[in-house]
Image (cartoon, rainbow, N blue to C red; front, top):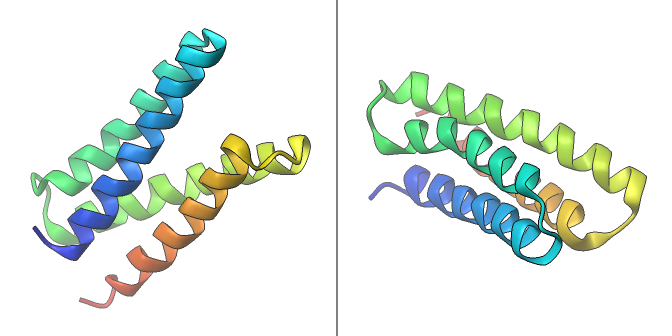
Length: 103
């Protein structure tokens, strides 16, 4: 498995786990559904079904959109969990994905 896939699948697992925790702790079906919907393009990008350049682009754009979403929520709530953690995870993932753009 390539480092790109490891990073992407790790981020995707964290995203789904967050949605699942929101569902378990708060009974939020919206959290679970939103995390699964957002995870779909990441799973497609990490699966190798797409050309490498297309998969990287899809992953980069999805993580960037999630970074914007999570950072806005973090700024409003000022709580580290879950939006602050996901903002930091999105920043790290974006940085790592940007490193593979040159390949």
